[in-house]
Image: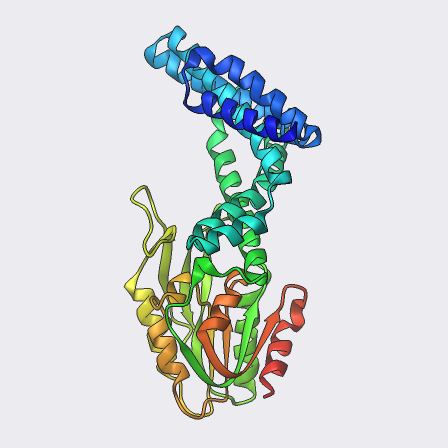
Length: 370
Protein backbone atom coordinates (compact mmCIF):
# COMPACT_ATOMS: atom_id res chain seq x y z
CA UNK A 1 0.00 0.00 0.00
CA UNK A 2 2.82 2.37 0.82
CA UNK A 3 4.41 1.81 -2.56
CA UNK A 4 1.12 2.52 -4.32
CA UNK A 5 0.65 5.66 -2.20
CA UNK A 6 4.17 6.83 -3.08
CA UNK A 7 3.50 6.37 -6.80
CA UNK A 8 0.16 8.14 -6.45
CA UNK A 9 1.82 11.03 -4.61
CA UNK A 10 4.47 11.41 -7.31
CA UNK A 11 1.96 11.33 -10.16
CA UNK A 12 -0.52 13.67 -8.47
CA UNK A 13 2.24 16.13 -7.53
CA UNK A 14 3.47 16.11 -11.15
CA UNK A 15 -0.07 16.90 -12.36
CA UNK A 16 -0.35 19.80 -9.90
CA UNK A 17 3.03 21.21 -10.88
CA UNK A 18 2.95 20.66 -14.62
CA UNK A 19 -0.58 19.68 -15.62
CA UNK A 20 -3.62 21.69 -16.68
CA UNK A 21 -5.26 23.90 -14.03
CA UNK A 22 -8.60 22.12 -14.54
CA UNK A 23 -7.12 18.96 -12.99
CA UNK A 24 -5.03 20.71 -10.34
CA UNK A 25 -7.59 20.72 -7.51
CA UNK A 26 -8.37 17.02 -7.73
CA UNK A 27 -4.71 16.14 -8.16
CA UNK A 28 -3.83 18.22 -5.08
CA UNK A 29 -6.44 16.41 -3.00
CA UNK A 30 -5.09 13.07 -4.18
CA UNK A 31 -1.50 14.11 -3.45
CA UNK A 32 -2.35 15.29 0.07
CA UNK A 33 -4.29 12.10 0.76
CA UNK A 34 -1.41 9.95 -0.48
CA UNK A 35 1.06 11.92 1.67
CA UNK A 36 -1.21 11.37 4.70
CA UNK A 37 -1.33 7.61 4.05
CA UNK A 38 2.48 7.48 3.77
CA UNK A 39 3.35 9.49 6.88
CA UNK A 40 0.63 11.34 8.87
CA UNK A 41 3.08 12.82 11.45
CA UNK A 42 5.22 14.26 8.67
CA UNK A 43 2.22 15.91 7.02
CA UNK A 44 1.04 17.34 10.34
CA UNK A 45 4.52 18.69 11.04
CA UNK A 46 4.94 20.11 7.54
CA UNK A 47 1.52 21.73 7.30
CA UNK A 48 1.50 23.45 10.67
CA UNK A 49 -0.69 26.49 11.16
CA UNK A 50 2.13 28.97 10.69
CA UNK A 51 3.30 27.29 7.48
CA UNK A 52 -0.21 27.11 6.02
CA UNK A 53 -0.75 30.76 6.93
CA UNK A 54 2.45 31.72 5.12
CA UNK A 55 1.38 29.71 2.06
CA UNK A 56 -2.05 31.36 2.01
CA UNK A 57 -0.43 34.77 2.37
CA UNK A 58 1.93 34.09 -0.55
CA UNK A 59 -0.97 32.93 -2.71
CA UNK A 60 -3.05 36.00 -1.82
CA UNK A 61 -0.20 38.37 -2.63
CA UNK A 62 0.34 36.62 -5.97
CA UNK A 63 -3.39 36.77 -6.74
CA UNK A 64 -3.54 40.48 -5.89
CA UNK A 65 -0.56 41.36 -8.07
CA UNK A 66 -1.84 39.36 -11.05
CA UNK A 67 -5.38 40.72 -10.60
CA UNK A 68 -4.05 44.27 -10.65
CA UNK A 69 -2.08 43.57 -13.82
CA UNK A 70 -4.39 41.24 -15.78
CA UNK A 71 -7.78 41.27 -14.10
CA UNK A 72 -9.54 39.52 -11.18
CA UNK A 73 -10.29 36.28 -12.99
CA UNK A 74 -6.67 35.71 -13.94
CA UNK A 75 -5.52 36.72 -10.46
CA UNK A 76 -7.80 34.19 -8.74
CA UNK A 77 -6.68 31.42 -11.11
CA UNK A 78 -2.97 32.07 -10.64
CA UNK A 79 -3.31 32.58 -6.89
CA UNK A 80 -5.22 29.30 -6.58
CA UNK A 81 -2.53 27.41 -8.48
CA UNK A 82 0.18 28.89 -6.28
CA UNK A 83 -1.78 27.82 -3.19
CA UNK A 84 -2.24 24.24 -4.42
CA UNK A 85 1.35 23.86 -5.57
CA UNK A 86 2.84 25.16 -2.34
CA UNK A 87 0.59 22.91 -0.24
CA UNK A 88 1.48 19.83 -2.26
CA UNK A 89 5.20 20.66 -2.37
CA UNK A 90 5.31 21.23 1.39
CA UNK A 91 3.50 17.99 2.20
CA UNK A 92 5.57 15.97 -0.28
CA UNK A 93 8.81 17.47 0.98
CA UNK A 94 7.89 16.66 4.59
CA UNK A 95 7.26 13.03 3.67
CA UNK A 96 10.42 12.73 1.57
CA UNK A 97 12.65 14.23 4.26
CA UNK A 98 11.46 11.72 6.87
CA UNK A 99 11.52 8.65 4.66
CA UNK A 100 14.29 9.00 2.09
CA UNK A 101 17.69 7.55 3.00
CA UNK A 102 20.07 10.38 2.17
CA UNK A 103 23.17 8.20 2.53
CA UNK A 104 21.75 5.80 -0.07
CA UNK A 105 21.24 8.74 -2.46
CA UNK A 106 24.81 9.93 -1.90
CA UNK A 107 26.17 6.45 -2.49
CA UNK A 108 24.10 5.95 -5.65
CA UNK A 109 25.01 9.32 -7.17
CA UNK A 110 28.68 8.81 -6.33
CA UNK A 111 28.68 5.46 -8.17
CA UNK A 112 27.05 7.17 -11.15
CA UNK A 113 29.67 9.91 -11.18
CA UNK A 114 27.36 12.64 -9.85
CA UNK A 115 28.70 12.96 -6.31
CA UNK A 116 28.23 16.72 -6.14
CA UNK A 117 24.65 16.52 -7.38
CA UNK A 118 23.86 13.90 -4.75
CA UNK A 119 25.48 15.96 -2.01
CA UNK A 120 23.50 19.05 -3.00
CA UNK A 121 20.27 17.03 -2.98
CA UNK A 122 21.14 15.49 0.37
CA UNK A 123 21.91 18.90 1.89
CA UNK A 124 18.61 20.23 0.56
CA UNK A 125 16.71 17.38 2.21
CA UNK A 126 18.53 17.95 5.49
CA UNK A 127 17.95 21.69 5.57
CA UNK A 128 14.32 21.77 4.41
CA UNK A 129 12.71 20.87 7.79
CA UNK A 130 14.85 23.47 9.54
CA UNK A 131 13.94 26.12 6.97
CA UNK A 132 10.24 25.40 7.43
CA UNK A 133 10.57 25.66 11.20
CA UNK A 134 12.56 28.89 10.97
CA UNK A 135 10.07 30.38 8.50
CA UNK A 136 7.25 29.79 10.98
CA UNK A 137 9.22 31.34 13.83
CA UNK A 138 10.24 34.35 11.73
CA UNK A 139 6.67 34.91 10.61
CA UNK A 140 5.41 34.77 14.21
CA UNK A 141 8.01 37.31 15.28
CA UNK A 142 7.10 39.48 12.29
CA UNK A 143 3.42 39.49 13.28
CA UNK A 144 4.18 40.25 16.93
CA UNK A 145 6.47 43.16 16.08
CA UNK A 146 4.16 44.70 13.47
CA UNK A 147 0.72 45.01 15.00
CA UNK A 148 -0.38 48.13 13.14
CA UNK A 149 -2.52 47.76 9.98
CA UNK A 150 -0.51 47.22 6.78
CA UNK A 151 2.79 47.00 8.69
CA UNK A 152 3.00 43.30 7.79
CA UNK A 153 3.09 44.13 4.07
CA UNK A 154 5.17 47.29 4.33
CA UNK A 155 7.97 45.51 6.15
CA UNK A 156 8.02 42.31 4.12
CA UNK A 157 11.41 43.16 2.51
CA UNK A 158 12.98 43.09 5.97
CA UNK A 159 11.37 39.69 6.58
CA UNK A 160 13.00 38.41 3.40
CA UNK A 161 16.43 39.56 4.57
CA UNK A 162 16.00 37.75 7.89
CA UNK A 163 14.92 34.54 6.14
CA UNK A 164 17.94 34.71 3.81
CA UNK A 165 20.27 35.15 6.79
CA UNK A 166 18.77 32.12 8.55
CA UNK A 167 18.96 30.12 5.29
CA UNK A 168 22.66 30.88 4.94
CA UNK A 169 23.30 29.84 8.55
CA UNK A 170 21.37 26.58 8.22
CA UNK A 171 23.05 25.74 4.91
CA UNK A 172 26.49 26.37 6.41
CA UNK A 173 25.72 24.11 9.38
CA UNK A 174 24.47 21.37 7.05
CA UNK A 175 27.58 21.63 4.88
CA UNK A 176 29.75 21.42 7.99
CA UNK A 177 27.94 18.28 9.14
CA UNK A 178 28.35 16.70 5.70
CA UNK A 179 32.04 17.57 5.57
CA UNK A 180 32.70 16.12 9.00
CA UNK A 181 31.17 12.86 7.76
CA UNK A 182 33.61 12.81 4.87
CA UNK A 183 31.53 14.48 2.15
CA UNK A 184 33.75 17.25 0.77
CA UNK A 185 32.79 17.07 -2.91
CA UNK A 186 31.51 20.65 -2.97
CA UNK A 187 34.96 22.03 -2.18
CA UNK A 188 37.51 19.76 -3.78
CA UNK A 189 40.98 21.28 -3.29
CA UNK A 190 42.50 22.93 -6.33
CA UNK A 191 46.01 23.40 -4.89
CA UNK A 192 48.48 21.76 -2.54
CA UNK A 193 49.55 23.98 0.36
CA UNK A 194 52.87 22.78 1.79
CA UNK A 195 53.60 23.60 5.42
CA UNK A 196 56.89 22.29 6.88
CA UNK A 197 56.07 23.80 10.29
CA UNK A 198 53.47 23.15 13.00
CA UNK A 199 50.16 24.49 11.73
CA UNK A 200 47.08 25.29 13.80
CA UNK A 201 43.81 25.15 11.87
CA UNK A 202 41.33 27.34 13.74
CA UNK A 203 37.62 26.87 13.16
CA UNK A 204 34.26 27.38 14.84
CA UNK A 205 30.72 28.62 14.28
CA UNK A 206 30.14 31.96 12.53
CA UNK A 207 30.69 34.96 14.84
CA UNK A 208 32.16 32.80 17.62
CA UNK A 209 35.26 34.97 17.93
CA UNK A 210 37.77 33.46 15.47
CA UNK A 211 38.99 36.83 14.20
CA UNK A 212 39.17 38.29 17.72
CA UNK A 213 41.25 35.29 18.80
CA UNK A 214 43.75 35.84 15.96
CA UNK A 215 44.02 39.55 16.79
CA UNK A 216 44.70 38.71 20.44
CA UNK A 217 47.19 36.01 19.41
CA UNK A 218 49.09 38.56 17.33
CA UNK A 219 49.25 40.85 20.36
CA UNK A 220 50.59 38.07 22.60
CA UNK A 221 53.24 37.10 20.04
CA UNK A 222 54.27 40.75 19.72
CA UNK A 223 54.62 41.04 23.50
CA UNK A 224 56.89 37.98 23.45
CA UNK A 225 59.02 39.37 20.64
CA UNK A 226 57.90 36.77 18.08
CA UNK A 227 57.64 38.35 14.61
CA UNK A 228 54.37 37.88 12.73
CA UNK A 229 53.13 38.18 9.16
CA UNK A 230 49.52 38.01 8.15
CA UNK A 231 46.08 39.54 8.18
CA UNK A 232 42.55 39.24 9.49
CA UNK A 233 39.28 39.78 7.66
CA UNK A 234 36.88 42.08 9.46
CA UNK A 235 33.16 41.85 8.79
CA UNK A 236 31.44 45.02 7.55
CA UNK A 237 27.96 45.54 9.01
CA UNK A 238 25.10 47.72 7.85
CA UNK A 239 22.03 47.79 10.09
CA UNK A 240 23.36 44.69 11.88
CA UNK A 241 23.62 42.76 8.60
CA UNK A 242 26.99 41.63 7.26
CA UNK A 243 27.46 43.13 3.80
CA UNK A 244 31.15 42.44 3.23
CA UNK A 245 34.69 42.12 4.58
CA UNK A 246 37.78 44.29 4.96
CA UNK A 247 41.36 43.05 5.18
CA UNK A 248 43.52 44.35 8.04
CA UNK A 249 47.29 43.93 8.16
CA UNK A 250 48.05 42.59 11.65
CA UNK A 251 51.37 44.42 11.85
CA UNK A 252 50.79 47.81 10.21
CA UNK A 253 47.05 47.90 11.05
CA UNK A 254 46.35 49.16 7.52
CA UNK A 255 42.90 48.20 6.27
CA UNK A 256 41.33 47.86 2.81
CA UNK A 257 38.04 46.65 1.40
CA UNK A 258 38.05 43.08 0.15
CA UNK A 259 34.49 41.94 -0.61
CA UNK A 260 31.00 43.38 -0.77
CA UNK A 261 27.67 41.71 -1.40
CA UNK A 262 26.89 41.67 -5.10
CA UNK A 263 23.87 43.33 -6.60
CA UNK A 264 21.63 41.96 -9.30
CA UNK A 265 24.56 41.17 -11.59
CA UNK A 266 25.71 38.40 -9.26
CA UNK A 267 28.95 37.72 -7.44
CA UNK A 268 32.40 36.61 -8.52
CA UNK A 269 34.20 33.24 -8.18
CA UNK A 270 30.88 31.49 -7.53
CA UNK A 271 30.16 33.55 -4.39
CA UNK A 272 27.65 36.23 -3.37
CA UNK A 273 30.39 38.87 -3.29
CA UNK A 274 32.33 41.13 -5.61
CA UNK A 275 36.01 41.44 -4.70
CA UNK A 276 38.50 44.30 -4.66
CA UNK A 277 42.09 43.96 -5.86
CA UNK A 278 43.05 46.49 -3.18
CA UNK A 279 42.13 43.99 -0.46
CA UNK A 280 44.09 41.16 -2.10
CA UNK A 281 47.08 43.51 -2.53
CA UNK A 282 47.07 44.38 1.17
CA UNK A 283 46.92 40.68 2.02
CA UNK A 284 49.96 40.04 -0.20
CA UNK A 285 51.86 42.90 1.45
CA UNK A 286 51.09 41.53 4.92
CA UNK A 287 52.30 38.04 4.00
CA UNK A 288 55.44 39.27 2.25
CA UNK A 289 56.89 39.97 5.72
CA UNK A 290 57.17 36.23 6.35
CA UNK A 291 60.75 35.43 7.41
CA UNK A 292 62.63 32.78 9.40
CA UNK A 293 61.37 32.67 13.00
CA UNK A 294 58.07 34.27 12.00
CA UNK A 295 54.53 33.04 12.67
CA UNK A 296 52.19 33.28 9.67
CA UNK A 297 48.60 34.21 10.54
CA UNK A 298 45.83 33.88 7.94
CA UNK A 299 42.21 34.78 8.71
CA UNK A 300 40.67 33.23 6.70
CA UNK A 301 40.82 30.86 3.73
CA UNK A 302 37.53 30.27 1.90
CA UNK A 303 36.28 28.37 -1.16
CA UNK A 304 37.99 30.86 -3.49
CA UNK A 305 41.39 30.11 -1.93
CA UNK A 306 40.83 26.36 -1.84
CA UNK A 307 40.31 26.53 -5.58
CA UNK A 308 43.69 28.28 -5.91
CA UNK A 309 42.50 31.89 -6.17
CA UNK A 310 42.18 34.87 -3.88
CA UNK A 311 44.83 34.98 -1.15
CA UNK A 312 46.14 31.49 -1.86
CA UNK A 313 49.18 32.41 -4.05
CA UNK A 314 50.42 34.79 -1.35
CA UNK A 315 49.75 32.21 1.38
CA UNK A 316 51.70 29.57 -0.58
CA UNK A 317 54.71 31.88 -0.89
CA UNK A 318 54.60 32.80 2.80
CA UNK A 319 54.30 29.17 3.94
CA UNK A 320 57.27 28.16 1.78
CA UNK A 321 59.67 30.48 3.65
CA UNK A 322 62.25 28.26 5.41
CA UNK A 323 62.55 28.41 9.17
CA UNK A 324 59.06 29.64 10.07
CA UNK A 325 58.13 29.30 13.74
CA UNK A 326 54.56 28.24 12.98
CA UNK A 327 51.39 28.98 11.05
CA UNK A 328 47.76 29.61 11.95
CA UNK A 329 44.99 29.27 9.35
CA UNK A 330 41.36 30.12 10.03
CA UNK A 331 38.67 28.31 8.06
CA UNK A 332 34.95 27.70 8.47
CA UNK A 333 33.86 24.29 9.77
CA UNK A 334 32.42 23.12 6.46
CA UNK A 335 35.80 23.62 4.78
CA UNK A 336 38.01 21.90 7.38
CA UNK A 337 38.16 18.54 5.49
CA UNK A 338 38.96 20.33 2.23
CA UNK A 339 41.70 22.39 3.87
CA UNK A 340 43.22 19.30 5.45
CA UNK A 341 43.18 17.62 2.02
CA UNK A 342 44.94 20.69 0.63
CA UNK A 343 47.42 21.04 3.50
CA UNK A 344 50.62 19.04 3.17
CA UNK A 345 51.81 19.57 6.74
CA UNK A 346 54.23 17.55 8.81
CA UNK A 347 52.42 18.63 12.00
CA UNK A 348 48.89 20.05 12.09
CA UNK A 349 46.21 20.39 14.76
CA UNK A 350 42.57 21.45 14.40
CA UNK A 351 41.10 23.70 17.10
CA UNK A 352 37.38 24.45 17.35
CA UNK A 353 37.29 27.59 19.49
CA UNK A 354 33.52 28.11 19.70
CA UNK A 355 33.36 27.41 23.44
CA UNK A 356 36.80 28.65 24.46
CA UNK A 357 35.81 32.30 24.99
CA UNK A 358 38.61 34.61 26.13
CA UNK A 359 41.08 31.72 26.40
CA UNK A 360 40.95 30.96 22.65
CA UNK A 361 44.15 32.86 21.81
CA UNK A 362 46.09 31.10 24.58
CA UNK A 363 44.83 27.70 23.37
CA UNK A 364 46.02 28.44 19.84
CA UNK A 365 49.38 29.57 21.21
CA UNK A 366 49.66 26.34 23.20
CA UNK A 367 48.87 24.34 20.05
CA UNK A 368 51.80 26.04 18.31
CA UNK A 369 54.05 25.01 21.23
CA UNK A 370 55.74 28.42 21.29
